[in-house]
Amino acid sequence: MAKYAIISLLCLGSLTALGFMITKPSSMAASNSSIIVTNNHWASEAASLILSKGGNAIDAAIAAGFVLSLTEPGSSGIGGGGYALTLTASNRQKWAYDGRETAPHTASSAWFLDQNGRPLDFEQAVLSAKSVGVPAEVALFYRLHKERGKLPWNQLPLPAALLARRGFPISPLLHQFLSDHARILIKNPDIKKIFFKGDRIKDVGSQIKNPVFAETLMRIAENPGDFYHGKLADEIIADINHAAKSTLFNRQDFSDYQIRRYPAICTDYRSRYRICSVPPSSSGGITVQELLGIYALRYQGHQYSNPEWMYYFLEASKLAYADRNQYLADPAFEKQPVSGLLSKAYWRERASTISLSARATPVAAGFPAGARKGYGPDDSIKTPGTTSIAIADSNGNAISMTLTIEGPFGSHLFTHGFFLNNELTDFSFTATNKKGLRIANAVAAGKRPRSSMAPVMVFKNNGQLYALSGSPGGSEIICYVAKNLILMLDMNMSPAAAGASPNLCALNTAPVIENTEGPFPAASALRAMGEQIVREDMLSGVTNILRSPGGAWLGAADPRREGVVLKGR
Image (cartoon, rainbow, N blue to C red; front, side):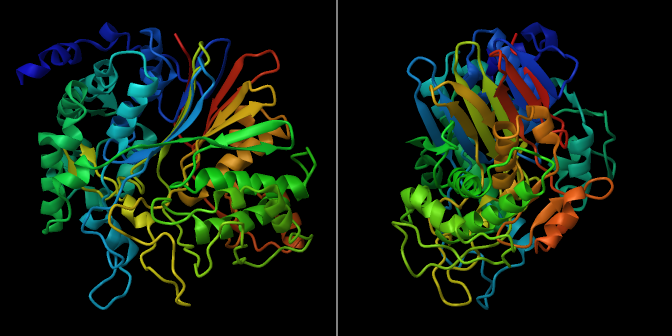
């Protein structure tokens, strides 16, 4: 292990030796320079450390992402992937990075069907090695660093490697996630060694150490290509194939993987703002913008207390999700009617179908320009997971990034100190629906499953960056982000108030309103308008940043998770 000697010496030092300080957590803050919002205290600390060492927002986000792989292993990690939206101060360019996982060369439309041609039980599919896509997070981070980073690459995994070796206290949320999945996790001795004491999950506050993951991070720091082209790739592939008891993956599946970079997709909102996000393979950016566009045509109010805004939000979400479910998928495999879905004329057409009497679900998809006939909807609901990062630095660079391994702990397969994703269960399990119509989001070799991740930036008409947002939450991410934008942009709510407000969504299904203590005042009014309201827990994790009238950044983390806002040091 001599080639890792320098990094090893750093990792064996104290936390403060690298400036990795423990500060008082805060879920909201203001800053005149740089600001950091993540869903975890240690991740925010790592980002702050990197900024203090001369790194930029992209460097800081990468370091935070590596830490989240360790401290939020149920939500994201190097065994998964994600999407990033970046703003470069020097040229004002806005780029979207697609780091979605891909199906291996052996995948087919029958991937999740049993021997009788019936779809597998969802948990059975998740816990199968067939749920694993080629991990993309390391490739995403390295591409971001090559094109937008500032510090040397090998410094960015160090905070996570240090923390993995020295240990960190198990948080209440991680403890809850682990407890919910203990019956599966305990079966793996490597997982049990890290997270269990005997046959029970370690108590909240107990130290968690993961020296194997620290070693993996050292290898990535030394040579990120090893994850896709070298011995590390071979070892990961061998572990997946061993779990599958067949050859699902080969080296080429990993070595062929590429990050896609696109110009951000942007649309105007109320003629005052320009909202930008990521294009497919995520459905999130387009659906957020379509939802907001339809909503803005039907509701002009600015009062949070008026339940009509919720009504129009729910009705707009039904329409936007209907289009999403039918058309959006991997653009390398399916023609995407992006311009049609983001056309103001199409929004007017869809908005005209909304009246003061709620539409029953499901609502039929429209037919935007560029859409192909013969498709049916994929309306399967995916489990919430994922994490979010938003950072703006003092030089004007910014990033909004959403990362995931899909469901809690992904496939539950564990290798080299990290969990492997179950992203392929984001595909439709069948290639056609009950009417025999083709489903755009069907499984295919090399294809990326549809995502709902929606990292967002908002600009004023003069081009000034005004807000950033993003959230975990499965299929409901789209609603979480859209709701927060409406409350911040239309209703002048602070990032903290917007993030803490109750969630609501209609995924072209009966509208769901978040369970809150006591009665929800708007529920009776919404029912009077015809909405069939369902009350459920809704675990968002928004990372909001908003520019104040005085020019300072205001940051807030969702109180439903363990997010922390820090000013850059």
